[in-house]
Every structure is written in structure tokens, then in C-alpha cells.
Image (cartoon, rainbow, N blue to C red; front, side):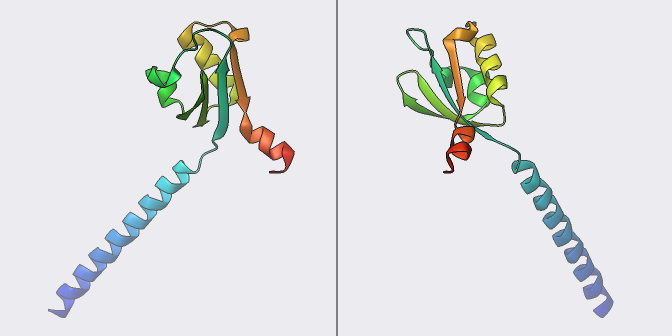
Length: 109
């Protein structure tokens, strides 16, 4: 009987260790670098990027005003600008992307 309890205990400890390692690995994947981007357009009417599937999935977006959006994204400022230009068929001069992460870091906030 004692041996059965030892085996069950060993199995439970193995399962707990496995789950702990798996959770740690998932947490590390979630810790990637994210950028705080502000997006605006120089065209009227400004596109609603939240309704566009690829752009919507590229960041966690908030509407910041008429045609202005703010999002937390793993894409850099340049990558986001390229995505917006490609998906919305816009010229470079009509898309403004600002990395608010850089602005806060430089201002000491």
C-alpha cells in the first residue's frame, strides 16, 4: 500500500513540475518587446484600421480621436507603417506612425 502511495506521489510531483515549466515558458513568450504606437492619416476620410483584420491583429488598438489610433504592438514603427501602407494602399506621406515608447523614454517619463 505504501509503495502505491509513493508511485502516485511521484506521478503527481512530475505533473506539477511539468505544469510549472510549461507555464514559465508561456510567460517568457508573452514578455516580448512591444511598442506603443500612435497612428494618424493625412487623408479624408481616415480609414478605421480597427475594422481591418490584419491591422486589427497587429496591435491592441484604442481610438484616440478622429482618424487617430494608439496601439501596443510587437511591430516596430517602420514595420507598422509598411503594413498600413500595404494593406490600405496608401502613399508613405499619408501615413504617420509615432513610437510613443521613444517619446516617453527621451522625455524621462
